[in-house]
Image 1 (tube, protein in one colour):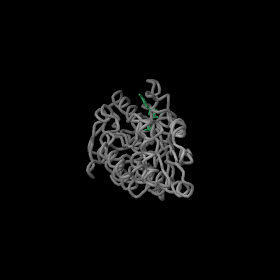
Image 2 (image 1 turned 180 degrees about the vertical axis):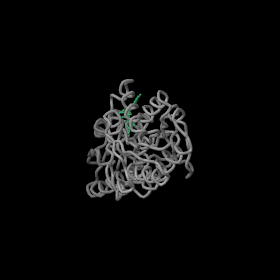
Image 3 (image 1 turned 60 degrees about the vertical axis):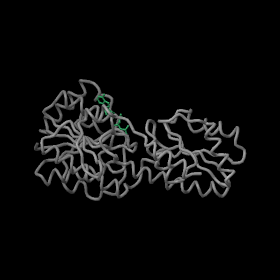
Image 4 (image 1 turned 45 degrees about the vertical axis):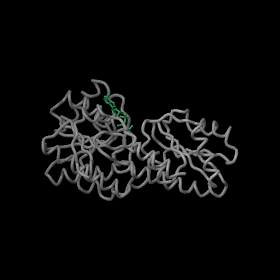
Length: 325
Ligand code: ATP
């Protein structure tokens, strides 16, 4: 390996910048040339890349988003698009890539690497959804959860002042990871997740019990992908039977993606970026780097994609229900 490229792809996640910084500096420290690719796979196809120096990544540890920009790139799904990307990489003498993204990004990386095995590919799990196999945590999940908690704490103040019941929608189309952690952290009365069917009757019973126990406010967290029709439908259904609270709905939306990465995500990004470059230097390819039991672990992209699903921690769910009585 003599020249590597780094790109961010799919949804942005806080912690991507610390990871880019680590990739660039670890590469240069080891005598490699490092190229930054703008807008994910689109930049490979458009040859939108630039040489990076140790100073290209100064003062970005604290920045949310990604200095390389990210994109969803349809042309990369076609053989023609991949061929263009390959030709552009070859013309620059690039023989290794670090891709930071989620399962879609890894799917593209694996396909590309199988077609063109002379370019080594290493994946770094970057998604706020925390739903990748091979790493207990993904980049951005901790920051996003902290952002959600900060917002819900503020909502709790007004909920309490007015005896209100808030239904709060948080991100997670397929993964209840943020909803579950935020729910525990904020003492939510209920957490509705894509992984579980929602029993509205059970929810109403819980809310009634809460009122009986003299709760002055209640928070119900609803992940985007909850199967009961979305946050407004759930709130409507509850409104018909729960008269003792003033019911409100808040959708937190894209603020959950932004913000300065937490210490945890800065360290995770640094560790994963560092490990990814060292793995490329050691001759690894078609792998992802992850963190398990606080140790760096390499998992083949194939295995990571085959096992791709968020495993909801039932024990945390049960604990949350008990602690919110
Ligand atoms: P997030 O979890 O935040 O959504 P992601 O990496 O899963 O991140 P996607 O939009 O699914 O985000 O994928 C990112 C990009 O990866 C796509 O825009 C596309 O360029 C590429 N990609 C996804 N699937 C494939 C595929 N089957 N073949 C080639 N490229 C793919």
